[in-house]
Length: 168
Image (cartoon, rainbow, N blue to C red):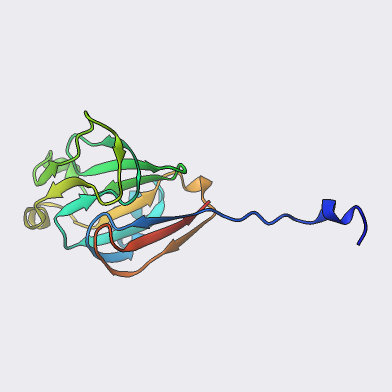
């Protein structure tokens, strides 16, 4: 080993891992099974979807809410380390004009949220009847900044069980 060998060694950068928790209880499904090409073809980002059994949507991380749609069917959130998530309940649920959804998080007071805080309450039985699909995509919208994603499978409980591990 000589004096120059340290200059030519590749330095391995340890990736930072962020765990994303279930925003709603249900069963994780492959994002490709969502009956909407925008999600299935990962046009808006990569992630998973949940076939919901619960009636509340909670924050999946500590972070900052970017936007809650006026119809309360979707919202965006950014983690402390700048992972941008988009949570979208159902497919074509924007057409319900807010029916079946009640906002519980008050953006007028703050946009800072803790994991597990309730964002939206929903009438799951109503939405099962009225929505094209109740599959709920959870996608990383700034996927180009991510090195690796680990996707979990199985049944999950909102704010308790992890659904994704993101490595930056």
